[in-house]
Length: 472
Image 1 (cartoon, one colour):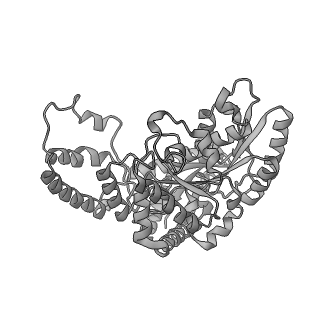
Image 2 (cartoon, rainbow, N blue to C red; image 1 turned 30 degrees about the vertical axis):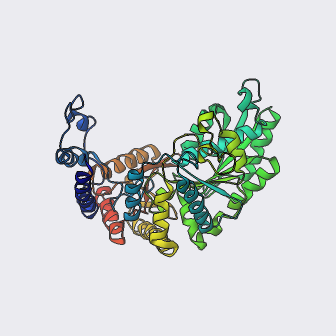
């Protein structure tokens, strides 16, 4: 494709992109295709001769779009949002055109320095104190892995990096029983084994109990294990629980453990002063992760990861062969030492576009609106007969349907709610996710989508009422 053709096709594709966003409500939220339906429409081998772009785009409409779950749909209430925005999309287009591999300062100085500055802007906006240094990872899972690796190295005096774990005492990482599955994955990848993750009991609000944490650390030390770190969560995936960070930090200081705070979803809400007080103690952590690609209008993937001691992170992860040395090595930040992958995309550009295009005031207004919509959803659901709102945390509502004939029969209620969420999702008008609370089946509804408005909340509750048989 020559540049004249590229220019013409690019204009047409931007029109298609705008049309897609404008008409996104016309699609079912979740794809209705059966497994294998997309693959069955594709040739068994790549074409020998090139095809016109119009034919490719026609197949996007015919094959790809019916197989998409539309994460930008205003009635997407599943998981947590992976929201986008027009400024972020424009930045992604530029990023693709630049096609820079931003592993070293020298391979794109603007990418490195913009990342440093824009992460410091965001640090200030969420209220982290000076002294934290930021890097953009692909996902919070990667940030948690980096934290666990750093905890492993600190706890072994960097012996595990040099010698491996063989012959060393078993290491332990602690997290709440409500913590994200990425914590277990990180512990396993770090070579600590499933036994290396100790799940700490939670209180009545599903928050990690600092007293139980301290007791488990003492028991593990007595048994010959080496406690290495704690992963606290500000906004758990299942129930939105907010761990008591200040109390956990006090235990970590006393026991000399690394503290990583997973605020992947709820951390964006720390732009709001009224939410920040819920994260008291956050500034005492050793590392913190927030996902702008969840709730700050920035296209996936863009994870903000701050560390208090970047030298420890670099020591944990750096490998420096001759071909990665440059004249500036040691005098500049080379972000390839701050994460697991060597290759790095120019992710800072889209976050910069978003922060500049909207400004902090508009982002705060959006966050407040999303939280208000969740409160509205909770109130509407609670007013329906048979609907129990289990909890609401910021922009997450967790509920279950308890028909009178099933009250008191836990197994039947679980089966009923699991079937209900499947029925709702198969209907296609809204998309929710199942969950578990205290061992029982529940249903999650998360607001925060870019295009979600109060009317979509009313529509969602009407669908739930209809399909649950609970008249509004």
